[in-house]
Length: 153
Image 1 (cartoon, rainbow, N blue to C red):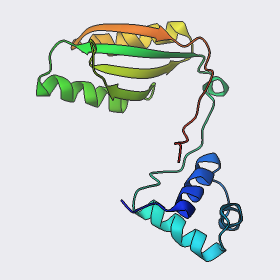
Image 2 (cartoon, rainbow, N blue to C red):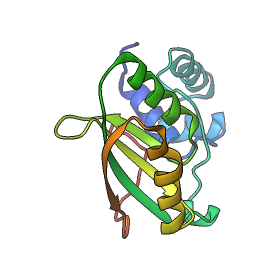
Image 3 (tube, rainbow, N blue to C red):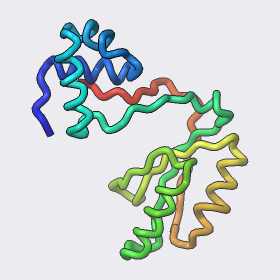
Image 4 (cartoon, helix red, strand yellow):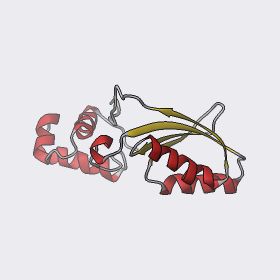
């Protein structure tokens, strides 16, 4: 990973705010000329500092009105169980995030659904039917007071 100087950090902050900026717009906002801004952006992409550029869609605009954090404890920690759970997580679009955590539970998932019943259906019919989960605890999000994907650079 390359060392990030102040200009790189400015570019990254700007791209996290609006990845649709033109090269000229990015250069102007970062205080650089066009060619150096373009070369820096290319380098940040090629070295994997910028992993991907995406469109952020508010869940409610897509008809997804239920958001929950679900803590999961597996029955065992064999290689087969871990691999099966990982495959499940990677293939289920409703699971937005998955983290291995410390404490009583093994994982924390961030899951979206159309409504509370849709979330229950996903948990009961898709996830728990795997037969490898010991227990879950679900925390419904009542209101998000902050949401960002931007890292503090």
